[in-house]
Length: 77
Image 1 (cartoon, rainbow, N blue to C red):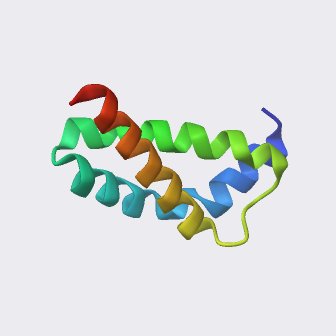
Image 2: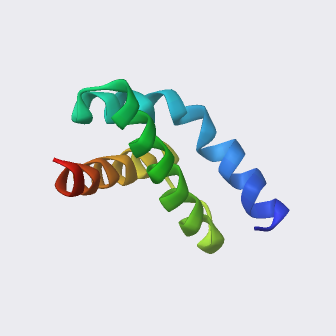
Image 3: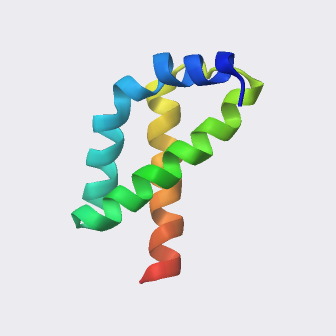
């Protein structure tokens, strides 16, 4: 991972990490599962940052989180 991608990820997405965790907690219903979903969502978002930062980072990250949570629920429940 390049320093530029890491910097953009840090600057644009990490400020919304509390919102990501809150959404994951709301969807999964417990803390441990929400932590797993949050981690997966951040990994998915990081992969897309090689193509550039999204126009609306918070909305992008929450959509990724929602999709990661529903994928996680389908596999684990």
